[in-house]
Amino acid sequence: MPKTLNRPIILGIVGDSATGKTTLSSGVAKILSEDRCTTICTDDYHRYDRSERRERGISALDPRANHIDILEQHLQLLRRGQPILKPVYDHSTGTRFPPQEVSPKDFVIAEGLLGYTTRAMRDCFDVKIYLDPEEDLRIKWKIYRDTTRRGYNREQVLASLERRTEDSPTYIHPQRMFADIVIRFQKPNGANGSDANLDVQHILRPTLPHPDFSPLFDGSGGSGLHLEMARDKDGKPVDMLQIEGGISDKRAERIEDLLWTLLPEAGHLRDQVGRYDTASGESVSHPLALTQLIVAFHMVKAAMGIHAV
Image (cartoon, rainbow, N blue to C red; front, side, top):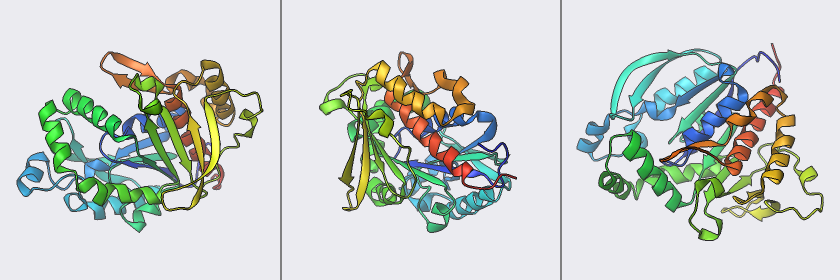
């Protein structure tokens, strides 16, 4: 991977509220090296604070409640390697703080609700991810996050979800069609259990060159990983990678080994991926680790595709 790039490589991670965007982006940043990554949350571009949105009867998911034009301009500046004066929104209080200067490093990760809203924004990304977890999981994650970190009680979170019933399919879900990879975490066969054992499905669209997983399908009959041709919601052909939550440590480590060979400079960070917060502390998930590695691979691949300075 080139040590210095002639422009930043930009990753977009978009999804509804509490779909795991921050968890994914933090793991990818660790793999790529946080010294070489600039991470921004596009939710900082909220036009109104929490009380103003309540007074206007508008949710943060509505583009009209966000400075989309400024976000668009800032993504274009970052892609050109120029610094920005980024607004700051404090989710714990629902208020805005003074802006701060942000300079792009070799890699920029932009995660949030509305990153693919306009064509100009979409054109700024080298890799576009859309997170689409099972809805029951998203609600569980949102309740946990908003009650432990954002000053809400359970009833307020549920009321917020109810108010956004129409906004999610109107403003967030349509962005799914623009992603290179759609990632869906789901309960194995609908069963409840630890988030460490969730299945994950990757819809791999042909807009990116994906890793060659063929060495992992050697006819040994090992379970835990499946790759097949499928049809997306729009009927277009895609590859579908399925990683089972119950994948054995041995098989997961074999897949991870393959991906780490593609990311040799980050090998010392192996124990940093797949981590997520729970009520009882930090836990580790093989499917999450593999997902973070696959996304990081695409960032490195994009970096290799442009000329080093």
